[in-house]
Length: 171
Image (cartoon, rainbow, N blue to C red):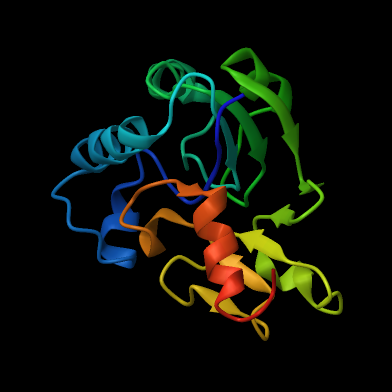
């Protein structure tokens, strides 16, 4: 069995995210290729990757584009939908995701794109995206942003997640 990874907010194909998040790219194509290369540096075929939303801002008319992207992302992939994920959930599965969710409890963590939903359940550890550069850890150390803007455009390993929560005594 392989390793477990988490990632969010790639925004493949989204030109405006470059300025919005001050990403160091001249075009969405360069950004996309860089994010794919960082992903492929660490993720192996036997690994499981949880994508916690906003894979792409592109809609269903860009099916071929997303098919191209997915063809470069190895591993067993599970998607938690974000506010910009516009394809039908079954289409994501046809393109390579094993399952698609709006929120997912995987035991140690609850995965949800928008961290606003994490209020009121502070005895649990949450992994989110959505907030890009706003924070890495929030809500008294119970919510960790695993979006690419916080992690050098790499997916985040389960070991790294445990270390982040461990810094606050949350293991």
